[in-house]
Image: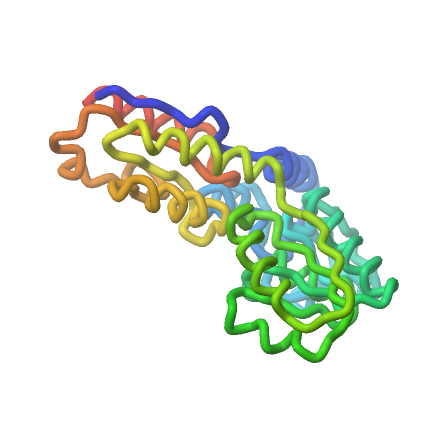
Length: 276
């Protein structure tokens, strides 16, 4: 089978940095915790756990040792609580996520009602909401009513959303009654380039595979975008999840992967697919 791989796919710089920091941190240390999964990839989290990185869900679960702040970041409240406990903090927050947090604080100080477009349940969005006072999350049109009473809006976006989604929501927000609006593009260019490469590829193949964790927002977005242009799009975590029967009658396959998908997962999938 002919297999084509997207020009841009797999680990982004932020994820690669977080994993590198995690590996360095657990060397020679007894107690190292990650506040939430370091990245949204179960296999990577499992490998790091075997090497000594323990994932915790709450600051309350730790009293000593070292805490790694994951790539999605943490709230100001969480960071202050960790500092109060006196634990060692290693910050692996993506620099772009830090930028969004800083922008949220600045917008608030400038008198804007801060609005972040994105998924309210995503850890990145939660961290941004917790980085400035009174941040409103808008996930779809049903959330727009929450903004009707504000006259000065400062709008940002979850880094892993698509440009089309961001633009669409900005269009809806623009119809509200307000006196001033300030929009700052906080989308991740790495994510955007991966989305563009995936859509370009999926139009050229008979079947498209998107590799990555089921809980990874950027991977799910890749699969969603590809599905719009190629109905034969499959979101899989690894080779073991592939049902060979779906390849029947297909000549050319396309492969892309989310920003938290390891290179070895991509390589194994591509190599085995080419052997068919």
